Length: 239
Ligand code: C5P
Image (cartoon, rainbow, N blue to C red; front, side, top):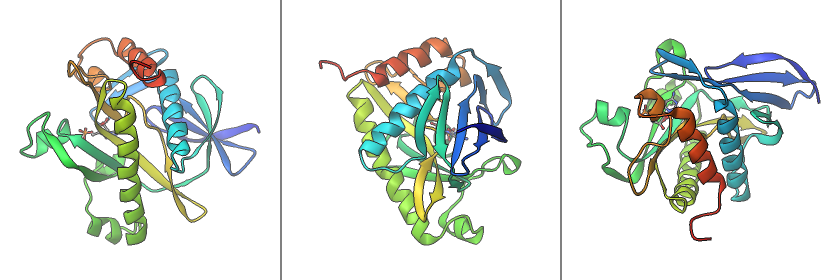
């Protein structure tokens, strides 16, 4: 399989076509952005940590019956993925109130959300990712009611698997974002799940272990990413 040409370049990843139309190459770059692209930096090695964690999580989810786009790892920071037809939705599951939901609604930061909340945004830089509801999703033709049901069920199942996994490693999954695509009539998890797309707090101290460290200048981003990658890839405490 050979890389052919650049298909798409996002804020932190680039996707290339290959000579196999079913397979794309995804490169996790060292770029990091926040606040709708207003804050930007390049942090050497960040792409590798995100690729490593996302790959580990996707393989873990596959082992637990969740279909993902992940196929193989080529080199640090570079993976192959199935060519999904992506659905332009950012599906966010929230277990604890933090971030935009605290800014926009009368929730207190740290307040548990039980059952977890699913928030779906329209993935569109031009429209600044506005929040959708089911009627808007159908009116815009983004997904059918059956697909949306599947997406929500998958989002909650992934949340349960990940929350439990991270909890055993002393990490609380506060919230995270997923993107899905269509593949052979199925809804499949695409994009990435990494420190850029999850909000993670240390269970003991409440310290941020994710992109909030970059967003709000809470510490050394690379040190945080390296530490959390090690924790996620290690056996749980006490084993
Ligand atoms: O900013 P907000 O609180 O809405 O983010 C909720 C979660 O979704 C966070 O974990 C954040 O990192 C993730 N997110 C993302 N990409 C976006 C928006 C949010 O990964 N475009």
